[in-house]
Length: 498
Image (cartoon, rainbow, N blue to C red):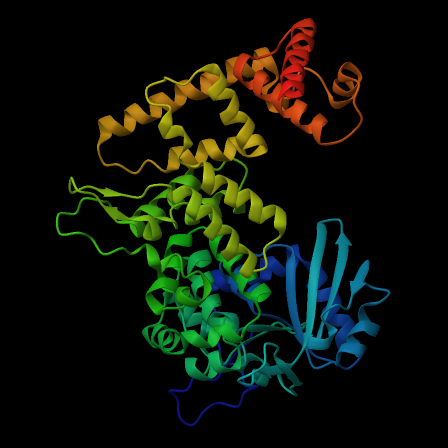
């Protein structure tokens, strides 16, 4: 397979189109060849573009992932064809086409084959930059693939495979950085981050996803330019943060955000956890504790990465800085930090434009994460267990995982004791669930029955009666119908007297 390289440390530089053998190792070349055989769709569409007189190249993350042996069914291409020309070429070939990104030069398509369904994005050669007051990139089209690659975020994403001729193009030595597992920018990081400040977050995200290191000069630019992230829309920031949190190594990316100061503008509650330690070290490092809780929560996932659980683990203690008190006995307290933290979580997630449902789920977990510690060694009554289940609702399994993850003590005896106690609580929940259908705790009488028994119309009194019966259900478990009716009538009589 021919290769095109234009290393900056050779003089004179070879012409851009001149092949320089050896840039790909035999294993990497074999990997790309195997990828093309497994994904003939790439060659198929490239032939279609070539027949129309256009160039097409597999680019960016697709090439990077192919060289890492992890290419999926998402394929990214770049071309000299303009978006309307791309639309014309893929219509009739693709099984679905969408143009929601056409304003940014991108056409999307889906191609179904015997080997699976492929999601394809084809972007016209381009460059884009921000001005200092805009939240949206200004797109201009380029004429050559080299122009396109220099505007890419990192060198490992600035490699291309020109098709159908299979010419490997790597003008910024991304292959070397891929081998070294390091993130660098094709030009200076200052220029790159000025073009799109979101790339600073992407550096942290790729570090978390790929377990790569970030080059010192890139880290320095991130630190110097951190405030520039504020011109990027909350929606784009949230999307990158989600990818980081859901990555295989989120701790690595989060540390980078905190150390460079980016977190101060994205999730300021996280660096705020680095509380000053009192001279006698009477409380654990909340920041390190939080990262450990996140790691432990990830270890308990059973069905793949769980954004709700991971965000709850990340934010569960953010109320501690505001509630820290040094008590007269020399101890440190954080009374009600879970309540304060739930409110702070809600505000932060709203600022980042998370959905209402996701915001409420994460906030609820933060609010409930300390509830178990009132269980002691099993002193809860059955009614307290029912309330625990009722308050957690569909989040119960996540609450189990978060509560277990929140134990980061190095005291093995204490950790084992907490684990056994929580095991006992889960066993009690299962016993009660078998007896009482805990997942759907409701009063023994519904609203229609309440109105019929009391002879009242829909309104506030029905809601009050329903809540009274719910409290009875939680306190005593299921009641016989006659008993529930009698208790309802007794309560109603007292309401009439008062």
